[in-house]
Image 1 (cartoon, rainbow, N blue to C red):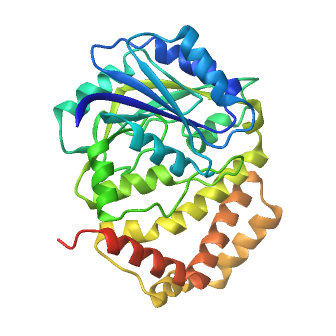
Image 2 (cartoon, rainbow, N blue to C red; image 1 turned 120 degrees about the vertical axis):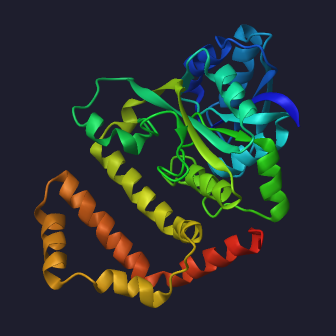
Length: 328
């Protein structure tokens, strides 16, 4: 693969978010080949035309630009198209609301180039708000992927164990390896305005199953722009619900990484190891608790439901992973 960085920027109706994102990309300090692969994921607001015109007018010669359309809804589908079109070895996932610091791309290149065993590299971010910051935001910032992904720079393979997709850096050669093996996403990530998620975590787990490291570096800093429509507790609740579902789908990855496979009986034992009083407390919190107690109870009962009535999903997903996973 040709050494350089391909910035894969996928968006659905991101027209109003793109200008500041592009400005930060245009300000990058680079000594390496770099390109933007822009993928419009079934937008309806003229996003692609806006992006093409903006970069043609304000873009910089140090970063080339190509744009494509992915009509199939789902971020993973859009990213796969972007990865396929990328001409460089290092792929940087930049969301339409990520404002990268001016050394982000060059630093990411240097880190990946110095250690061939790093499969995925991530940084950290602060939130920037379209309107007033909610007083509850800091408590729940991690659900918005606003957090540090490690206590210090280095290997987090067996600590956090995965990365959020914003600002993540991958290798195209690893993506090609997974495709050759027959890897397909169990999760499609967000579709349009839906709040499905987890594709970034799934990709991290897939790389770990192939023996690659997950790495965090504090020098990789960006700002995450928070639109007003996302800053309410209703949205947060929907986001957490989507995460519970994604975690359920990814249980087979986690078990394979631990060297175990659970049976239907194992899940039932996990559910019934607590007594009736515990369930009574959860029900009380679900009905009368504050926001956080209600959310914790919702998560608990959704997880119980998955463990008791969705073993077939676990078993099927486990088989799908085993079909592409090398036997050795």
